Image 1 (tube, rainbow, N blue to C red):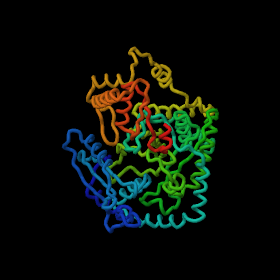
Image 2 (image 1 turned 120 degrees about the horizontal axis):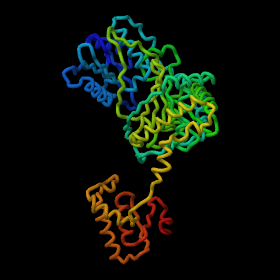
Image 3 (image 1 turned 90 degrees about the horizontal axis):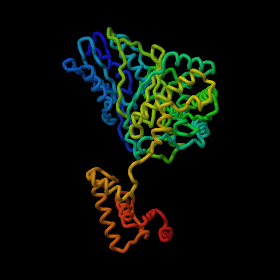
Image 4 (image 1 turned 120 degrees about the vertical axis):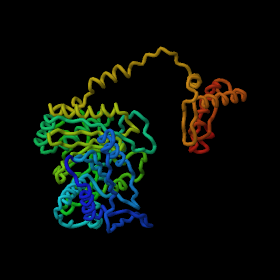
Length: 514
């Protein structure tokens, strides 16, 4: 949000100037026989448009909707551009600037660099030429990260993650799809200044950081909710260890899978000490790209889950940029793209008042908004408990809230029934009579309504009875899983028979014995 006079044409020129300085903003990627190849053009590849929303009924809402739509637009890596900008006029002295960049050419740190240089170019300041370009860094990294250096780094992670659980098995509201859709949503809350100050002092007393405190809290909450004592959390790191990379726009960030062992009787102090050691060791071995690490440690992927970890903690600490553009004051407006990269991601960021903003991004494939609220509340409650007494054992810090206790002990246990439980075949027939057109079952090939399911099962029942099936006769089903298997099950049970499915992958001798 820009409050104050703005020269849109000068802003356009500033954007083009900055893009001309960084090869990543002049880049597209072509598919060659050996794989993708970076093509750097001579001119900036930025899509810049201006919109006048001042005539709309609600300019602010229209700007938010436009920004959200921009965030959801896909990029074409082969043709570009990989950066889009929309400047929206709400009124004479009020604009909204929406920026969308593909992650292949930028990261969170890059946004600060981009804004800083836009501000300088807008006011006509001379910018020194970048000492290197991203391609130079990539070439250096590929040359350096070989041989003994690479082997030592890979060996560390091989040892650090040996025996780690293949997945974090959090209870979910919906079955995990075989292929993630990456649809998601976000919830945001705030940790007050007093708690943040107290947690910061606790960290300093242990020679640690607020980031390690939040990592410890998240690990403890996940351990309690998943019922696991071995937790792996993904943590992004800026990976800009060389001074030449500090003012470059590009994708430098790397991800570290940091492992934490949870002992419920340990104190928060003990957990924080462990997390601090693990983080320091991981940071000293942060140079292996995560995708290389995943290829090395998880050659056989479960396509329904992210490899090595399913929950990420992002602690935003990129350098702050002066919030002014000429005579216009800048204010950050949060937006969302309706996606979730992982099962859960906790994004934390300190603001100027000393509060800590906590944003929980969650997969809507797996969790309802209510469950996401409960998880975020767990995190906040554990932060307050740790701030009040870090010498408490973890099982007390992460104890159930009164709301959850009521839900588990009373609401979920209210299982009294007034109706009579009948057999499943009768239940399906009753449902077909009341909601015949509702979808009952779906597989890769077709969907059946309750009327269709009940009708086909009844026809099979009649055929089996005609064939001489009597109660308790065993009837073998030799076929694929899917709608046909369910029709067969109901048809056999309706005739009084026992359903005996055969495993098509079993050896023929095993099937014959069955």
